[in-house]
Image (cartoon, rainbow, N blue to C red):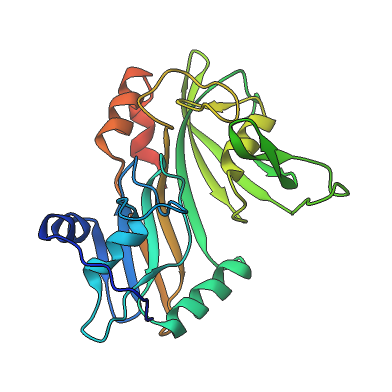
Length: 246
């Protein structure tokens, strides 16, 4: 997939980008995005973003991979890029038809539900807020409402906090964050959709993704929890739950 103008990266940036690679083939590039790295920043050039770093994988004909989906800047974990236009179309179709399987981990606080697992089926719409665009759980009949479904289970809990595994069926903006809020839970480090427990950043990690490979068959890839997430889990007394994750 061709882009103009071509972005020239320095050797340091190229090396940084290559360290993020979990898997690479003719159709897929699987990356482990660190927390704090935005996928894109609109209207600003020469800012380090994951999308810009994909120029590290540009070929001699000027074609380079493109992100197949997005993660919030503070969210860490596995993310896919398509190497070709046919691969991009195949991945987009897989997301649209809900054939992608994603697993997230979140460190949360709050009273929450009494049961250990459940399914949240609550439409979401976008809304404007003084802090920017936000997502809201809404009624199906509300303007802008879009279906959203998230499956969750508690991996560990202690004194009003928990490590939760989440498997969203849909990919709405901030879906996991607002769905958790709808059942009385807030992700540690949350500042936009409520106020979470103090944390170095939003404690949400994209742990795994699986789906149909553009060339046939299926793929499955994981990203280990980063050090800051593991450290926070230990501080909250929830580290044992990481052994049971996905």
